[in-house]
Amino acid sequence: MVIVNMIADFELPFVFSLKERRKIVNSVKDRLKKFNISVLDISGEYPKEASIAIVFAAHNEKLAGEIQREIEEFLYKTFPEIEFYFDVEVI
Image 1: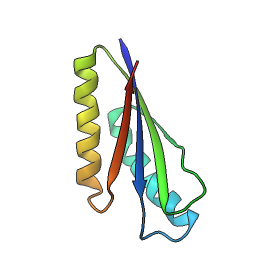
Image 2: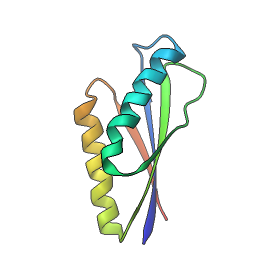
Image 3: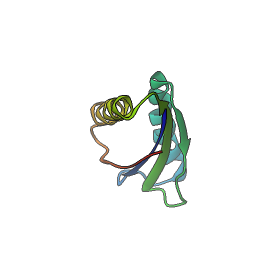
Image 4: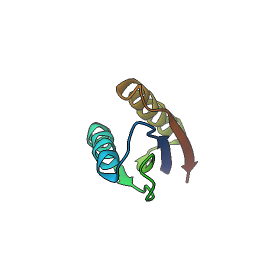
């Protein structure tokens, strides 16, 4: 069994307040619920940048890679206006 920790960083140049950023981050978190994963907002105080941590367990590294690709593709397709940067750690 492996545990995957993904950090998704993204910029929001069209956002001007923390309230607007929180609305977008909550939308991302809600849409990721379908993957049965843990998602946490780890953003700082700057409203134009956001980060979320995504953690899930998989039976093996191959399955973990497949789930990771599905999550990344889902985010790119669902939020085309946002450019995501992923940092992945497999334990």
